[in-house]
Image (cartoon, rainbow, N blue to C red):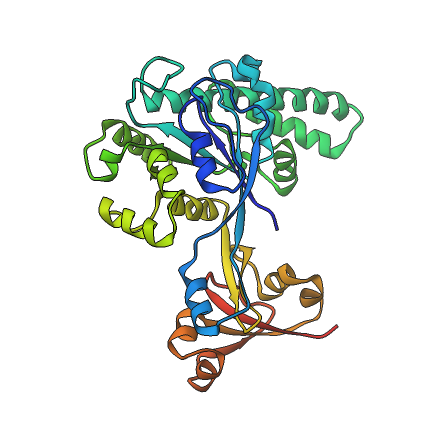
Length: 366
C-alpha cells in the first residue's frame, strides 16, 4: 500500500536538504534554482515508539516499521503554470502525490539566494498556491471542453462533468481553491477525483527555521506562517533543515544527546513524517511475535477484514474473527497470554473498526 507526499516550494527553501535527511535516496542540494529536475523518491520509515516497545517485549527476528513515500519535487516559481522554470513538468510531478508538504523559508541567510531577493513566507505560499490554482484552472477548462463536446451525444457522465466543471471554473478563475465539497453527488465526486486537481490535495506547511527559533527565539516569519495556516485550516510543522542535516550524521545516542542540548524532545523530521502520515488519513495496526514485530498501514476507518486484506487478500476473503489487544495492555500485561488472562483480548467481527495502535491476530479460512 503506497502513499506519497510531495515536497514542494520555491527554489532554495530547503526542500532537497530535508529530503536528504528523510530518505536514503540523496537529492542534489545547491544554491541555485532548478538543481532538482526529476523528482527524487524515497521510502521513509514512520517513527513509532509502540513498535519499539513491542519489539523489546517479543525479541523478534525482524522489526518492520510502516513506511511512506516522499517525493522531492523541483522548486516552482511564479509563472510555473505557464511553463516558467520548467513548471509544467514539475506540476505534473505533484499530480502524482497524494498530499503536499509545502516547505516555506522562515530564516534569513544572506549566503542563500532567495528568488525574490527577500524573505516573506506568506508571499511565497501565495506564489506557489496561485500556480497550483492556475494549473487546475487549465485542467478543468480542458475537461469542460471535452464534456461540452461529448454531452451532445447524451452521455450521462459527460453531462454531469459539464455541470461540475461549469461550477468549478468561476471558483478557480477567482483565485480560490476547489475541493470535493464542491461536488453534489457520487458521480461528480468520481469525475473530480479523475482530474487529480492540485489545490484539492491535503496540504501542510513545513516552516524551515534557524537554530535560534528551535531554542525559543522569536521568529516573525514563523508567526506569519502559523497565522496564515490557521486561517486556511492547515497544519504547520517547524523544522530546521540545517539542524536535521547535522542530526542525520549522528548515531542514535549522539542524536539523543544533541537534541537534549538543544532542549528538543523530538526531531523535526520525525514530527514531519508523522504529520504526513496523519495528513494522508492513515493509521497503523500492529502484529507481534517471535518472527517479526510489524506495523501495517491502513486508511483510517478500515474494518477488520479490510485491515486483514493489507496482509493478504486471502485474510480478507476468508476472514472469521480478529483477536484484538490494545497495545498498552499488550505491553503492560507481558504479551498475548497475559492480556488474554486479564480479559483484555477481544474477539471482533467484520464490522469492527480498527484503531490506530491495535495489536491484532486474524483468524481466517480459505
